[in-house]
Amino acid sequence: MILFQRLLLACALLIGAAMPAHAGDTDPLFINLTTDEPARAGMGLTFGLHQHENGHPLTLYLNDRGVLLGSRAHADRFATQQKMLDELMKKGAVVLVCPNCMKQHGVNEADLLPGLQLSNRKLSGEALFRDNTRALSW
View 1 (tube, rainbow, N blue to C red):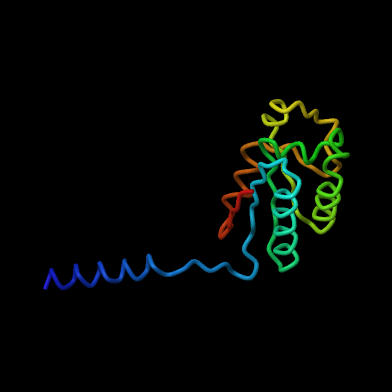
View 2: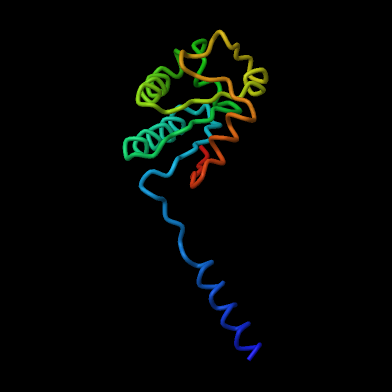
């Protein structure tokens, strides 16, 4: 009997592990944007925009070289991406910027686009670990 129960439990666990995860209609999305490659950054921003328009609250986290996207000092290189960031924020998306990465890549707080928020462990943690949040990285 014990062997049968263990076998039944093992089967249930195996079936449960094989089930795909499905996002709910309004599950939050957290996009970790690390690239300063314009095309890749544009893909991440476009994906975020589409999901946000589909009802998923969106947080973008600009870190590593991604902080350059949010700097007015780099507007000539990232004009399209900066327009997308502005559009996303106007639609309610939150854009957090890693302060340590800013130092690493020479971005000053005064250079940040209006509406971008300096991140800290509380802000990024609340966004990333909100119930049912899905996370992607570009």
